[in-house]
Image (cartoon, rainbow over the protein chains, first blue to last red):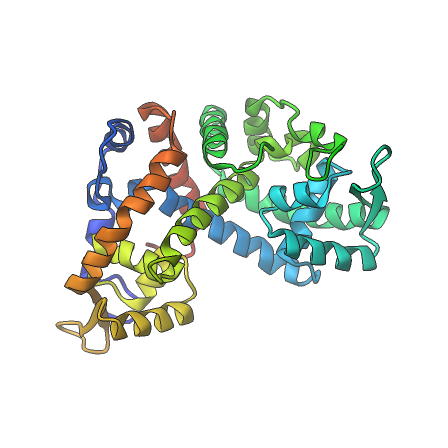
Length: 179
Length: 179
């Protein structure tokens, strides 16, 4: 066996547990072991591996543009929902509020976003993309689109629909914010 | 409007794009805008939000046990696939190899894992859980199980099965390792 090759232990990871058994395990109210489920049927493991790779791919591509992940996410969210508060942006971009606050300071200095007081409550500040910010997003979007469409290659419309509806249920189950 | 409440801009985020249209967008070979897709139908956004919350919940619960996320993941993977190499553990736990190497040093010092040379190639070192390591995993597993079953509340067997099969396709599309 060469360094980096698979060891003998790996066989147990790909054991083909029937997925429906895991579905039942989830609904029978008992605690099941990870061995019973099998790592390949344990969705959080798969999700961490997939989304870790997806994020890394985009991060590498954006390094050339000197954009951080929170900046990229802020641009993307504002591109479809201008006028959010810092709180909302922090939730949507899955970023600590203090990090998002620093991120927006930097983006404002770069001329990518501007902040305006809310029309009827000037304690609330809303964040908007500038033209330069929108141009920056338009430039990086093909990179994100490419990672997204590569990731879902071979997935049918119907499968994507079910996949999304499960994600929506999951988000309702875990989120701490009503947004 | 109070601080932290939703701003007017949020409406555009929850616009109900039909998911099948996104499925078609993925397969028609053209580049579509994020506005066309809608953030709520853009799976990577949902996956980042969900898995970020799931990981944070478990991390918070494990702080009391003085376990880091890489340690927790190494325990979980070894609990179902003993005898892996560092390379393999780094891939399965979605951890940089240098971080996994330091993590294993600490876990060895704590008596949670032991390393053994491979039977036929003593350049390869395999990692095994000790009894104390397995006991540590058994203690923390209910926390993980709880986060897992909460996240999938209300998801049927059939939905979980489709969800898993899409995740398996996605992993094949994005992974850089044949494991």
